[in-house]
Amino acid sequence: MKKTILKLSAASVGVLGCVNQYIDSYAEKIEPKSRLKYYNWEHGSIFYTVSGSGKPLLLIHDLNVFSSGNDWTETAKILSKYYKVYTIDLPGCGKSDKPAITYTNYYFVQMITSFIKNMIQEKTIVVSSGISSSFVLMADSMDDDLIDGIHMIDPPSLNSLKKQPDQRSKILTTLFKIPVIGRTCYYIATNRTNTEYYLSEKCFYNPFHMKQYHVKAAYQASHYQKGKGRYLYASLEGNYVNTDITRVLKNRNKKTVLVISEGEHDAKEIAKNYRKINEAIAIKPVKNAKKLPQLEVPEEICGIILNEKE
Image 1 (cartoon, helix red, strand yellow):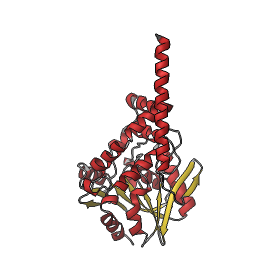
Image 2 (cartoon, rainbow, N blue to C red):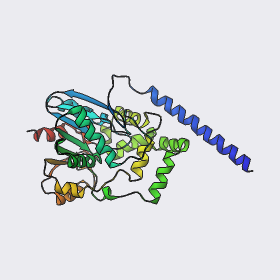
Image 3 (tube, helix red, strand yellow):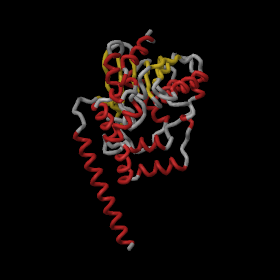
Image 4 (cartoon, helix red, strand yellow):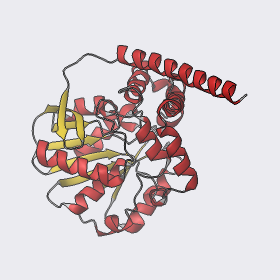
């Protein structure tokens, strides 16, 4: 009986492995062919783009497996008329390397610091989305010569950034790291149906603004490098990327703009709590947008950034 169970288990794992290989081959087929630029950071290669001229401006996407520098395509096109615009794919995302590690806040702080110092090589305006705003705030607090000003688009609540790994999240993290089973679970979580659902329900205020190329870009971002995005996915689900930014926010004395999408149900409350910590933060609301206003209403996001231009 035990031998039969073992044989069935081995066969099941074999089937899952074949399915995973098929998904990998499909993901490789849809990868666009283009000239790619990489920053060879000490912990992996970081894909980036650069366009325009003038004062540098770095656009950093939200940290999740569906996101990449593609989130900024339309925004970068407009802003490159006024700035030298950089976009990056954060480690674990898009076309950048996806090391099999537990990702932490400080890991991304190191990466952003290194990119600005070695590639941009001068003080930079940074526009960040979602939880990536916490990395930028931390990086600026550690090195005063890096960043000129910060625009934070829909950052997470201060309370959510205080959440730490618990027993449940540790088990979930371990599951996603198991070679075959973990990759299968990851591919289920990031299949095309779930990708479309994430974009239409979480990211776009008006689902009809979502185009198929948005879905394709998000799906590709999560599937590059044969499912290795699962390590970032596990780290996010496990709360390993969180850090308390209250003290950093309180001590901040540089230009800081918080852009809130009014379609996000808790956006106003989040902004209110950020202002409680630091009254100097400017709040800029954006109508008819949710999690990705830079994709849905890029002109409005650019207008806010350009109005702050010195």
